[in-house]
Length: 334
Ligand code: ATP
Ligand code: MG
Image (tube, rainbow, N blue to C red; front, side):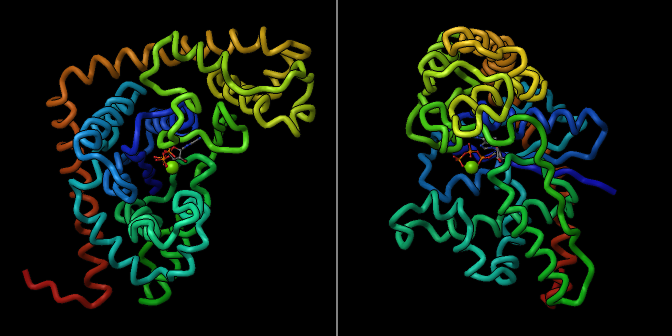
């Protein structure tokens, strides 16, 4: 039977990219009646330095974003990764299945490690191995993510296949990515060739789910664009990444195809389009921001939800891990 898993790092506040590429889809899958397991991946976040107090706050804030976007902790399992130790344990096994060369090829590692790769954490290199463990601890079959995680999901498949092959079993499913919608890769508002990221040092590069209406309008007004008006077909946006990005964001928020957006705004200047985009963004995001703020008033309740989710997650992952220990020949005597 299909089972959905996905996670978001508490490495900063939620962005519009996280919302359109991931969170919005998570809620839709839950509402379609799928079995959904969602995780705030705190162990992933510390692959780059996180101030402990900030990490705690951000973990709760990401959990609040899940809840405010419609994740129902009764219908979905919602928890934070470090409370279910099977993730870290299975990641170790996968560290011994995956090859170092596979990790060095990952573009996310190259981007995040930068020029001084030798000085990045070993965890940053092994990140995809932990991600494979997150998914496969639940033997999840489908993983909704943004476009940027496609390569990591291919590596998850490779790890599942190699584990099954090395141990002569048919134990782990070969996971399918779900990369769907108009905004699977939201770009930075300052640079149309860079992904919008919660860890980008520039706050102007992104819209945060905690931004108020004024901040959203100001960031969209200042977003980098070119001097041309909008074309009447998507073809006309080919070499205009910043313009293409704003069209995709509009489409993602409105729940329509990008083709419909250029058809509607054909010939419009950005001076016309940007205020309309800001209005739409505020309309869609303000209720989520308000609910996040409300939930953050009661961190104890968020922690209780995460703890309950962790118990239910553990009940699935622990037996899977025990099977893995047995398959690999570890003595289990208690
Ligand atoms: P970081 O910069 O710390 O890596 P991030 O913004 O990339 O943070 P992640 O926690 O790494 O967020 O990713 C969470 C989910 O959001 C993933 O499914 C990822 O594919 C998706 N996602 C991240 N950025 C974007 C984006 N710009 N557009 C669409 N989806 C995105
Ligand atoms: Mg990321």
